[in-house]
Image (cartoon, rainbow, N blue to C red; front, side):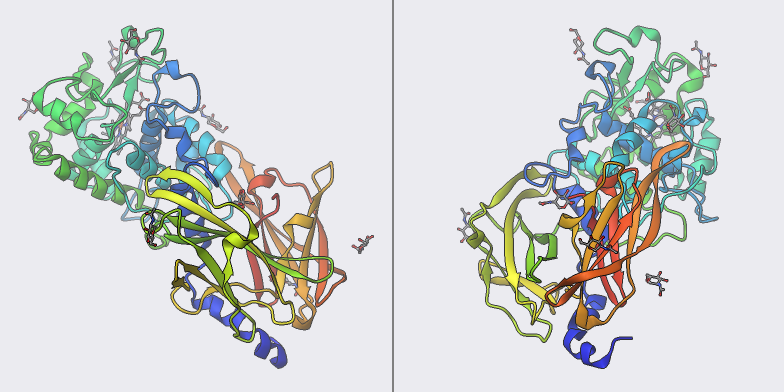
Length: 522
Ligand code: HEM
Ligand SMILES: *[C@@H]1O[C@H](CO)[C@@H](O)[C@H](O)[C@H]1NC(C)=O
Ligand SMILES: *[C@@H]1O[C@H](CO)[C@@H](O)[C@H](O)[C@H]1NC(C)=O
Ligand SMILES: *[C@@H]1O[C@H](CO)[C@@H](O)[C@H](O)[C@H]1NC(C)=O
Ligand SMILES: *[C@@H]1O[C@H](CO)[C@@H](O)[C@H](O)[C@H]1NC(C)=O
Ligand SMILES: *[C@@H]1O[C@H](CO)[C@@H](O)[C@H](O)[C@H]1NC(C)=O
Ligand SMILES: *[C@@H]1O[C@H](CO)[C@@H](O)[C@H](O)[C@H]1NC(C)=O
Ligand SMILES: *[C@@H]1O[C@H](CO)[C@@H](O)[C@H](O)[C@H]1NC(C)=O
Ligand SMILES: *[C@@H]1O[C@H](CO)[C@@H](O)[C@H](O)[C@H]1NC(C)=O
């Protein structure tokens, strides 16, 4: 409960935060990985699959392809879902299941090893597995095929059911497994042909399917493509199978070893009817793949609540934060990112903010800082333009929200402005790390807020036995008051070393005031 005098002056910042759309940390973080793929503020996720022939986990001579591996990993995570029981699906349980014969091949640990450094308190491994499908399909197609992405998946803490179909599996068992995961016969055929437009079957991992003769000096893993265009998400695999040309559907159709012709058995299980339907047009094939892959990545344990679809933000506040200096001065800084679907490099960006009592500041022009407009390169969603701002706020009046004006158009997060509170502020730039990794964290809390329980909730990705996927270890540390800075009281605490400081985040909790999802290492 807030003292009533304070509720009057700080009220807007507390209560507007409840209804506002921004910030949704899960959606913001995934949007960053999806959209910031080159140039300034590149998140570095798409680089692994650029170009789509790239193999990020080893030699290019292995004949392996990261984009294809990502789609296969998602299938293997999904395939053991039991939708009736509400268990399994995309939950990163695959990380604990890599030693099972049904998950043979290097794709699982290659992919999880690449994803692991991106996991943090708001980005689960399961969401990264879903994101990777969206990225692969979107990056390996022209024009870019867009699979809608949602976030909010929760990582399993142990392996799940067995049952991923293998090349040896009889078609009845395979269809039964798909059915358990919520996919009908034609869904199963469609999903498989959609997956098998990318990548290869390798002698290394599947010697019973691909003979040693496939191994050559520039294809040491012995990969044989499913179709002529293994790095393009396209209808070729289907046309080559039905027309009996090129790769004729790939090794799981054509291999000499009849026992492991699983794709052929599946495709023939309805006498090619599903595939003939999909072959009507490339558009039909792609629309069906988008629908099936969307269902695949959205198959999750029943308890999971997915977010809304993550739509690239045409105007996005990035790393917006407050800092309190030694004299008690307050600095408000961050970036505004524009997207070229709505804006161009000539657009002017201004911000204005609302004080605690609701008074608006004059417009502040982001270029006035002298910082250049930072221009990212193109992503699947267009070019990004970054505008930097850094301005002083009068601590006597404070800040409760801000709005963004782009070439005369104002964006206010659906009405009241993007909420921001200045009562409790984490100070990452003053946080120091001792040689043994111990950190001294600092925060500033408005003295008038009369909040004395100031706690840092530290969320650190930590290694787990049996999977490359980290778990999030959360701990709480109480901060102690230590001096003042103008209207603020300074708080500090010692935090023990964490295994991965780059992805460790801090939520500051001071009564009703939260400063959330801040990086400790800046
Ligand atoms: C009956 C079901 C399926 C079976 C038996 C099967 C089997 C296989 C096998 C044996 C490989 C070779 C892996 C390697 O050599 O590394 C493979 C590759 C692949 N599978 Fe499947 N698969 C099935 C369905 C699916 C589905 C539904 C998808 C995705 C929607 C999918 C996506 C992929 C991809 C993208 C590759 C290429 C991986 C790479 O190049 O590293 N598969 N599949
Ligand atoms: C054919 O596949 C079966 C099942 O994996 C395997 O036991 C057998 O050795 C394979 N035959 C050849 C010639 O590779
Ligand atoms: C490997 O080399 C052969 C012969 O030089 C070439 O035809 C083939 O395209 C190369 N394959 C790959 C995967 O680079
Ligand atoms: C299905 O397609 C394959 C590959 O084109 C072909 O060999 C086979 O005869 C077809 N079967 C039927 C029943 O249409
Ligand atoms: C940039 O967009 C503005 C409208 O916001 C438009 O007036 C201007 O012509 C555009 N400039 C370029 C170079 O496209
Ligand atoms: C202080 O706040 C934290 C975070 O809300 C809470 O977990 C803790 O129990 C509180 N401590 C006291 C002494 O009230
Ligand atoms: C994948 O990595 C995990 C965690 O390090 C390990 O336990 C497992 O054996 C690895 N799997 C394979 C197939 O190497
Ligand atoms: C308070 O700050 C002073 C000066 O920075 C420091 O020497 C002292 O150890 C701090 N005391 C506590 C209890 O953290
Ligand atoms: C935003 O903050 C993160 C975490 O501290 C940092 O890695 C990233 O570089 C920052 N982005 C910009 C544009 O400053």
